[in-house]
Length: 312
Image: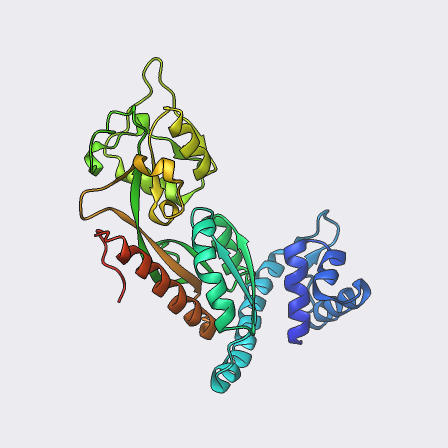
């Protein structure tokens, strides 16, 4: 049994296809198939049911894949130990970021990080929280930036910053005359929300004390884009809540529609998350230090007092 064979098994389990798995592993399909066959012969079991389309794991195969993932992760820790001993920060690093954080946070830290750590090759994907959790557990992401807490026993979290909520209220709205708003003012009945699957949506719903069913002549609209919510709000179709970082680049003509909460402001916790095996921790630490420093500075500059204290 070899680590290479286990890599091949994990690739086939992921892609459910020998040809695609071979492409992923940069080997020929016969080579990959032969190595997996040798492993199955050595163990005297079948890992894959090749009669199914797409290929499926056998019952014992599922257990082997789970253990193989642990073994491969632990083998990679050896390289990590050597890199940390040498003080080396580099190599490929796969990072996921949730959609309500990606467009505002990425431009804030990416250039600084690349300049300081030119040997790190970042591969960044925009993914939902559920997709991130799945990919971290399967070993397809090294870390991610997401709203926390997640309370997942396989994933560790380290807080980057606490991001306040900001009301975006058009001038014809019932709250438009209030200089500052409170959570008690919020009602889902006139709130424009992100579509289901966005963790920011869940935070907004939790802030709203009362859920009212739609009355005659009213409606509830959900979108996958914060920009769409702003445009709809500008048309007088309701208010919405924005993540604080999104307000930093808002158009001058729209700034009058921003209404901050009375202090302390409600906020969401945003963290860098990673598997409990703690691979590539030197890069995770580097990302944490750069991102938290930049964002905390931006929030402090705006003099926003939030419910959860900023991490020290």
